[in-house]
Amino acid sequence: MKRNCIFLLTALMTFCFSGTQAQSTAQWRGKDRHGVYDEKNLLEKWPEGGPVLLWSMKEIGNGFGSPAVTTDRIYITGEKDSTAFLFCLDLKGNQLWRSDFGKEWVKTFPGSRSTPTVVNDLVYVASGIGNLACLDAKTGQKKWFIDMVKELHGRFTFHGLSESPLVNGDLVYLVPGGRDTNVVAFNRFSGKIVWINKGLGQEPAYNSPILITLPERKILVTFTAYALLGLDAATGELLFNHEQVNIPIAEREPGNGDTHSNSCWYEDGFIYYFAGDGNGAVKLKLSEGGKKIEQVWRNKKVDNYMGGFIKEGKYLYSCLFEKQMLVSLDAETGNISDSLKIGRGNLIAGGDRLYYYNLKGEVSLVKPVGAKLERVSMFKITEGSKEHFAHLVIHDGVLYVRHGNTLLAYRIN
Image (cartoon, rainbow, N blue to C red; front, side, top):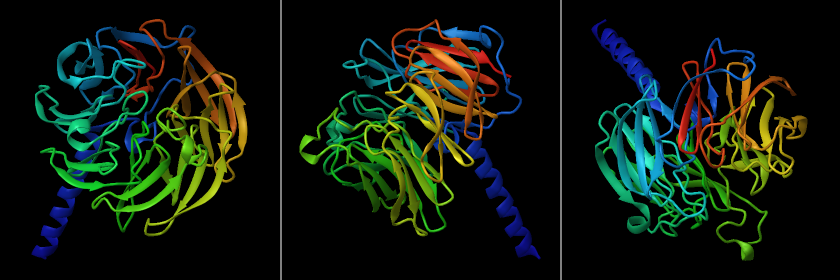
């Protein structure tokens, strides 16, 4: 009886601890990096002119990275005078502190390009020139710092590194893209290397990885310049890869067919990826142990390379770049089912609606009914500067929109 009581108490403590860990994690595109925000009682239609603007903060530096929002703070990266900064704000947009973590990308599209990953009392940030840092979430004090180019033979992408760090237990992952140090796992508390995998020796691909949890293992899924990679998250063993065949090997170079910014999606034994600069939209069947993949379908007409995508039931939702529209695809066949001509943009979901932020600065509320798409509301972002690249974020009934040096918060419930 005593042993049973101890077992039950241990199980309860483990459950509670796991729940706390999950709730204290804020990262790129939310839970599982799917871009789906589990929010209740969101507005089904916005007032004319858009939802109420709660506040705007115009001092976050240049950049395109989305915020990471916790229960009481907002973390966002920005570039000022070639320096990479992590800004910490309260939920009213007031700056609590800022901390620099080296130099930032200032060549093409100058500014930060990734989202902080917040796990309990630590924040992990990466810069466009390859710096990875861990900071105290309360004070901004740096715990450790790695220059991946100098220390790990990392290589730049054409437009700067854009990966948001992924945390799994005691590990944090990043893709330096070195020929001998392609994918690396670090101890997230010390910054020490735990494992290195050479991958296929390719440069990075702007991709933020996801984690697949199977009974046998956890799998890190990410992209390098011309291949999807699946690695054992604990050991670094390369389990599978899926080559992007759009660019002949002789023509491969930075900036040519290597922009694969969309994080993958795993569900019910299948991996979905949208690589508009590669194979297009693809569905892969993952084997029961996670060591093999088999292509189910491919739709090369879906040229979404940086807008994110959503899966809901039997349908996938994505933008098309050249045709400048939002589309639905049948998840069984990969065929396009419906479309809305609302421009190129990025996509998230909240409640039973899709939120679409296009490159003209228009934020649309879209109602999906199976394959059918209907735009029910729209407003335009007028504050901020430069390109409308940053992905939207929803937290506790607030829609966060980053436009260059400005972060805006709108009440949507």
